[in-house]
Image (cartoon, rainbow, N blue to C red):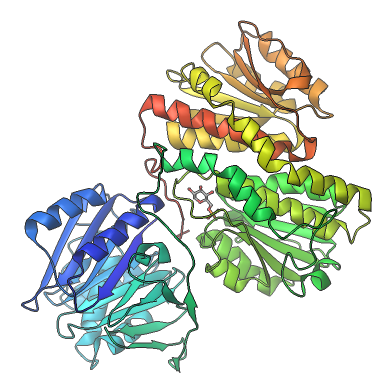
Length: 610
Ligand code: G6P
């Protein structure tokens, strides 16, 4: 989603800002822009619709440069994808602003500012912020005070950076609802919405907290909290590495990330399992004391992370003997829900910044949950910082918008939660040892699933001219069918629906014909015979099926049934293993369709607005 980069330095910073934007491209965006204060003390700005490269080319020919500046990638919310709506937004010839988030009272403020004589060039809510700060600057002595006065009038979410030619060494930043990180250099300072943008220039960071406003110059950072107290925020040294050209031998980040899954899962397991159980500090110090009391689990998440939550519900109830509800965060946060006694609120999120999931976490604190746990890939994220307990999935930076390794590492983490809760709820030592052994087999089993790549690439051509598809699974494979359908629609734009196979005859059978490929996930578990009956129902109606089946399930291929043998695995880990061929299928279908695999249209990696 929208990305922010800002810099104040002694050196010229256009290339730093543009490199920062490139590193945020993976988050999804539709236009980009940059503004600097040039050597003559004038605001110089450029905006382009489309890729950051278009902005880079424009900057190279225009020569836009300076020692202080701000830049932005925009993902349209208010107003279409046009150059006028791209950020930075200006007020007068002095002030420029970039903003992530949504200002809910923008209409009211727009009317007020129009009455004050301001003219609007865009349909965005951000332009309102620029004019409001400009208006406040008339009576406030500094940009800092003007921003403080302006944010007091804003309702909604923002992470923003403002710059004014009257204070040509100062950036003023404000955070409420959209993350911002300050990067500290030597004689230069930076700001961004994601530390990844700043890794080429610094590894020292400070995370702003909700309500913070900060004044940043080359040599000084002053942070004021919500109550306007001058505060210190803890400094962190980041050990994250991110190689911008890091696709290695792979054509896309998504394919690289699919292949990284064995190593990513090894990283999740590292040091967290004993020979036959889970290590006691896996969910943090003091977590045991909480987890032993838990009688119910409520999981909240969005997108792919929601599918991980759905699998976890099957696991927690069947293995850990604890009741579990799962809900999409945007639904959970706006309804009155029942809180069971001794409930654990679990958020699952790759980014730890998804607006709805973060809001659900914050809401849970008022609802009487026993504690909160986040399962997350980003250690510095808001969710990790605001949860009582955190489990880091250690997947490494995931750049492809369509989530792959983040999902399978979340599932691995959730199996650990099954162990951590189950051992307090009567799970036998043998059962614990069995789960541990199954988890330890994961990297090798994923390698075996990856070996299907060539066969899947061949099969993908059958899908290239299809407009619709149906994914079927039963039990804990139903969410995997949902995840397979999500992957296919995200990156190939083929309409894909997932059904629990038992529901076939309650509607979707009406859709079956030779133009509607049906993808089935069929591990060798207790539901296999039921699933085979569902397959016959499709076959009897002339459907063409692609079945990912356990070698031992003894399916035979024929004209209407294409079987891909998946190596046998413990049924408990089958949801993780069967995800892999579905990821590869969507990838190779997208390749044939020629879509933008890593940055599919209209989508964002991290959805920081609701
Ligand atoms: C976006 C991404 C999805 C992701 C979802 C939830 O829609 O495109 O890949 O699953 O957000 O994100 P989170 O970071 O909370 O897991």
